[in-house]
Length: 420
Image 1 (cartoon, helix red, strand yellow):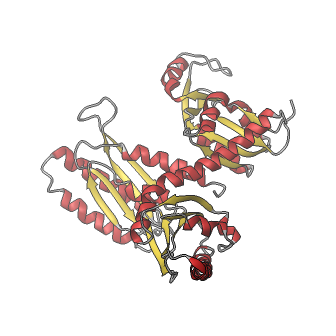
Image 2: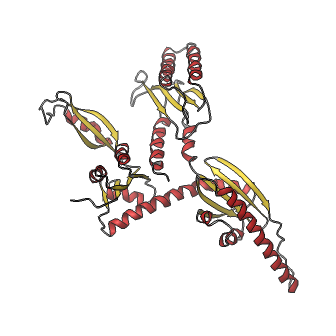
């Protein structure tokens, strides 16, 4: 994983999850994808036409909401000179507020710069936001190599997100096993082994040629019917760097395209396992330092914050299940402000508790919440200033559960020991 990738993926995943769950009362939520190279003026003109078309909507409320959303999207678009390297995605619409019926809607607008270039130009007016193209990008970060092999032939493919490319198919030319006995059978078997060796060498050369140049290659899945794949794995046919990237060896009924599809069906589970292995290694390193009392770790939000501000953190570990906000409290009378960490569920009670409470500086009862930031974003920003690594850990492994339950969901591996 690159330094920020698990954090960026987590943030985008969180935003998209929120957007995907938003529902409009009618088909009045706008989704716009503008790919790189597309003129902003073209998109603005298209929206102008859509605004005109929306004037035909019979329902006064729906018509107003659709036209207001189109205006919001136009306003946001005009802030950009061009669509940039990766394009722009904008969502806008009247969202019913929690527990509110018709008339409780509030206009919401979201602008997302995708993590990589988007390939579609899309406008939709629907009762939901179309986040699926961005969600697909979360899966498209890494490439997996697929190598199917048995004694009859081999297939080499790459899988990136949902995009599957069958790059090469080979036939072995290796004779079938003989059933006859005697000297001729032994000679036949020796010839067959030579043919197999030559065939394995050929497959290895093609695999090296295809997989080695792929910078985003995360791992290789070796598959096929029968034991041939294990014989291939044991030999020195693959470049050592690729051999180290074999993440799973699985059985399939076929070796050609149907076999590749069998691997693809099992791939999501395999890929999840790869990230889990990375997370386990990070957590095991942390737990080793805990167990050996080396003084090279700290945990708990306040202690980790102190270490981050001192530039002492090498790797920040945050559970994706942490549910804290960093809240800024400000006095409107004298400008005094302070920050506190509050549980998401406790925010309402916290705000009520400020009502009538005197300011520590001027004693006026003028304290109120001025700002609130998700704790992951807050700590990650401090980590960025000190060039610390940030890893967001899922709660789906035993170690991930331990980070959440035993260490408060926030921990750090240090560059140097902290004093006091």
